[in-house]
Length: 364
Image (cartoon, rainbow, N blue to C red):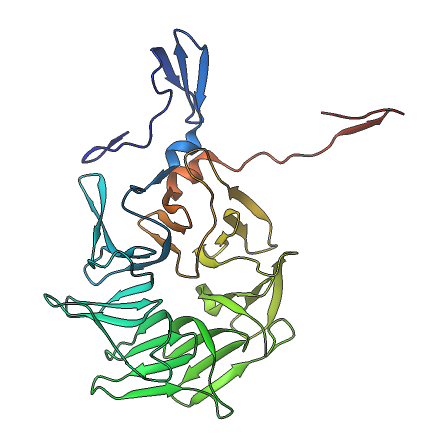
């Protein structure tokens, strides 16, 4: 496909076929006539989605915007930088250790990187080797899950054993309630001057300069697994807690937006606009209307990828009109502008059911 600064390969279709003619219809679908196998349709949706090089990018666990505007990827084979130049996209390794499972990667503000890994917290200053931090610390010396860099340069690190603040003077301070550790901290979200803390088994917490307090409501309990929270417009928050997707308004009122039969509703949620959410689930990328929770579209597995299962709250990132999706099978990129031009999928409905003593037939 032709872009402003060059050609971009979206994928290979009809491999080995002799194509004699093709045209594009008003919906963006491409119809191709071949010598030996008739007419084929290449759906417009296929051109709105493409994949990073799966030889380089394995399971993607986090996607963050780096200090220089490039995207930082935490993967099962180390940390990478996703560069885009002249229409081509390349994933370049940050670390030489391809066995390092990186759950989160952020810049340190000085050209280096902080990595939250299965082996704990690591730091790579610019031009220096990667070094593990917090040896023998009761919280830091555990698998790390996510990171947060505060405006003053202070680093927060969430692990399976609690949450710590690494001050600029080198001091390490645990963030914990009076009755003990926060336990498994799964996600950290900056929201103005406060920080939301999502935990597995200890619910949702909010930190501010006045202290740490647990958020309790009929929809979010003290022992819930809270997987993700995303601040939105007008003081709203979308929260994934257990099997529920909860919408919280600026006045603190909550309503149930969606619920699933599975123990986990979804892994990630972001605001596409004030009226629409994008949700990274275990079975595709969902577009949901905020007003009533209706799913407008679901992007599910397609033939070039093993599956569309998101991996973490940090595995869905929207920038520049594109949704970057961190999946168990790699990195997929969805062109949201092109997707919007395709319109919504038609709704399916049963219009007639006829019964037979021997066979039930379902007719359109």
